Image 1 (spheres, rainbow, N blue to C red):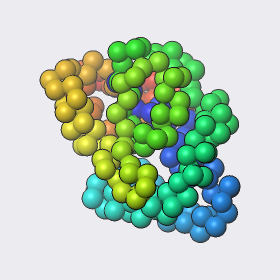
Image 2: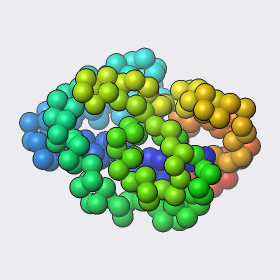
Image 3: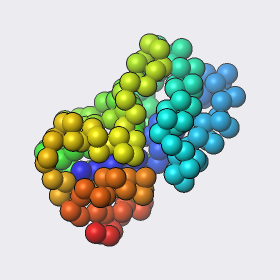
Length: 186
């Protein structure tokens, strides 16, 4: 099992995508400080899932008011960011492996063919309303895993963050990935 952001992809893909869209529609830049604050609180585990969802939905709905811009930008974004995928981590992914990520499905699906697996569990957004149908974050990742794969064991987890502690708890082996380099911790 693989996390995506900062594990396979060098950075936070959703944030990078938001910046990419802001460059195309400059009026969205006023939301950058608030988005940075949310991401910071997320990264240091200082925000519960309900608050994180509520805050994300607010900004997702603002960005998704420009639905055509968003949809048109996904392919362009990945074409300009493909070099941010860690080649050594991509080589590790097998067809039967699972990528489990907070990244929204509309975004990660833009590079699905590069990821070597069709088993991708991601955040689900309603692109018309900006509502988060399912936030695949922290303990929700384990819920989604169990919903889909039931009692299947997680042999190995590759992640960059202790935000994935719930997944770490159910994995036999855990690797922390730093700049594309995995280090076994369990």
